[in-house]
Image (cartoon, rainbow, N blue to C red; front, side, top):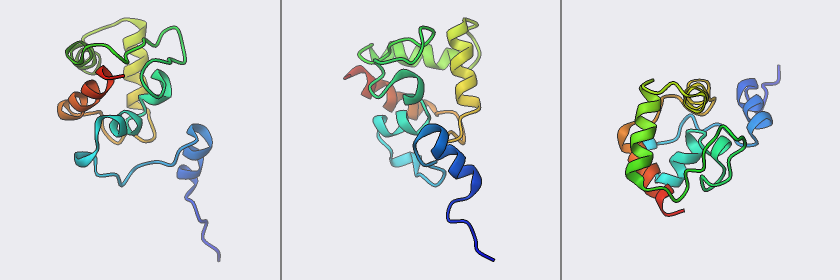
Length: 117
């Protein structure tokens, strides 16, 4: 019996997102740009955080890192109830590549990188 080269879930992820899942990635050594992609942020905010796919998705590239951190933390903790916040929380919860929401340390790396975009 031949084994498939790519497991079906991984193949579906490639078809839907155009990228391979990063399940085995070592998140501790990733930089902000890599984490932005790994957590799927790029899928809605665009490659540099400045090209959102929807009017509900804000441009975040170039904002101050502190502002990005504050807003991200509130959204991830469920402290905001705007449609934008609900969309982001849902996207993270159901992302194929996101085995866990970003930690504060990861958010800091992402925010610091986004502030330079």
